[in-house]
Length: 221
Image (cartoon, rainbow, N blue to C red; front, side, top):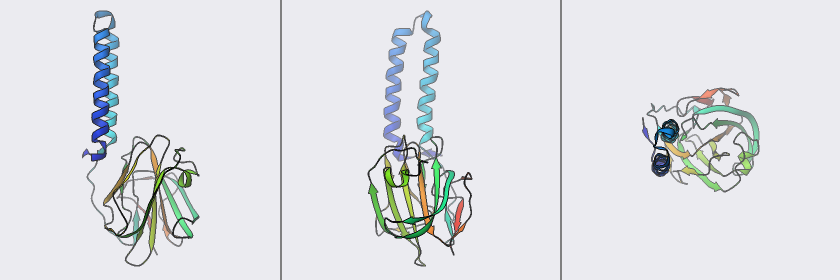
């Protein structure tokens, strides 16, 4: 386990702020009457900072490659499985699987399939609660489409949530990408939508927990 590079600045900044707050509290409460409050404040500030550090943890995971499977692009829980009309790029009915990430989940994002990046676009937007139905079309988000060797296309969206204010994606159009390589990061609470051909076999249900790069969510036909 290591710390993801997206967290370096936030961890350093939050650590400095916590240290300044602690120094001020120590200055005003270090006498006997304020010792209990000083201890409580110290524990609270340390717990908060360790939570920030833990949020940006980067696990080591076995890379699985299977062209017939679409893997979960993130840790979290399945909140949507439905057929929708994709009207941004592919322009056809597709099976959508949406995965919600709470603030306690690892927020790294992995590529669900291998192939060539055919489309990528960043959309500024609102910050509705991530499981809100309109968050897929109104929230800040990115849309990526990967074309597989067999010509099938898989679309996936990083969707910012109520707390998230920054989405990071490392891929661009024309990239040749490998299944379950890291492709991005979403900071603090969010979701990812995966859209696959409508005739695909769904392997998860609403409410199922999934592990990024490890849990297959769809079998392509």
